[in-house]
Image (cartoon, rainbow, N blue to C red; front, side, top):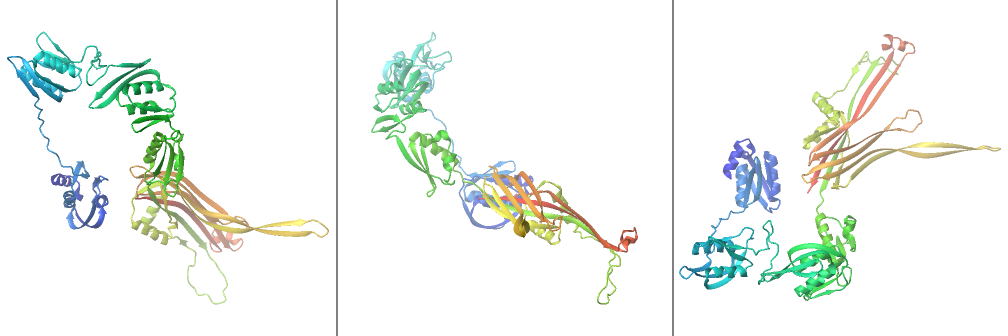
Length: 612
């Protein structure tokens, strides 16, 4: 293992040779190795079933030595897949024991040509091999004969007759070719054209002849090692008749509370009686149970066949869990949700309850929490030009100073900041990966320099697949006045004032969906509105709204940037001496003008983080 780690370190994975400093206490080994991998740029995977807590202090220790120490201390093994290290529980290799075939109890007298054999669940192929080696008479197993265990005992019997008795007691027949080769094979008529066994009509201790139990139905009973197995072949046979006939043939006690309606067609082999009942009653309204060795067969909803079960949920809330169960499973089963115990009460037939239990176990999985950090930033780009001369009269003598003629007044940030802002505002979606706290310090510096305004920095937490909603709003009220004049001899004027509200909201809706590989799909819907000055004096304030909807996919703890919502404002104002302020060239001496251009772009930073 050490040699492989050294080879890997020499082929580009320099992080294995780096020195590490770690101090941990009762930390899961998964978290510790993940920190090592992130710090030293390694690809590490660890089996989640390993339950190990680490308490260590490493100072100036190489990463290779740390990994070797963990493997030796906690019995771990490393599997290498290219530059990927996979940590698993160490399983010591067991030395393979050389196979030594059993020495069968065989005795042969070549003078009298008699044989003594004592077999007890011994292999047919092994018997044929060892009897051939002992007697020097070829004994072969015919093709198509399945692997079989032989049990027989003969003593001092002629060789051929002894083989015939052994074959007979084990469902085989013995034949002899012209060259005195003995062949053990299945009885004639019991092998189809493909060499597969179909039936067995030989009377023995382990089998019974096929019996016709009804029109179009036959039964064969096999007894193996004290267990009873049955083969059934039926075509469009009433289910009730099959149950009665097979139970009678097997000598099984049963009670049939109501007839099972319907016919069935089936062909099964080597099944137990319980499996037969489970198969044939599936899809009907009946079920069965045993009581003191008696099989009770009746309708699922009848008294004695109903059962009640309490299913507790470990990870999901029980609220509305009954709505998730498919209708087909709920038929005939009463379901009650018990929120106090976070459980579900099921009442009905046992087979249906078991199906619902399996379904609930499948969906009772822990739901991941997602922390969503949102930063709403407004990028400001603009300039203001002021030109002209202003003159006035003051109460006191004005000192000479300042600008004689208006000049150009711009406020710009550094080139690096402007390039950064251009990058953010140019694209609709940019993945900037994982960020550190310095990123937020950069935003703060930009805000101080008035390159942008951080409008909101909320943190939302929600479950996987559930929507998180944030609304921050501001309201402005204006007066709406209504004047009513009632005609008459003396007209009466009634003035009614009513306050109306105009809202400007910041509304963000995010619905995260986490995949198995911890990629997160975000459905983002955002709406931003601002107040704008009224275009007419006395009118209510205006409202400018910007909204977007987006679906993006990011990795855990990566930040995505959404931008492109732009607002442009332009104003041009001036004042000066009448007439003279309109004459070319002279207007620069007898007027003052202000020209402003401003563009605001809205950028949204979104960073989802899984909370385990």
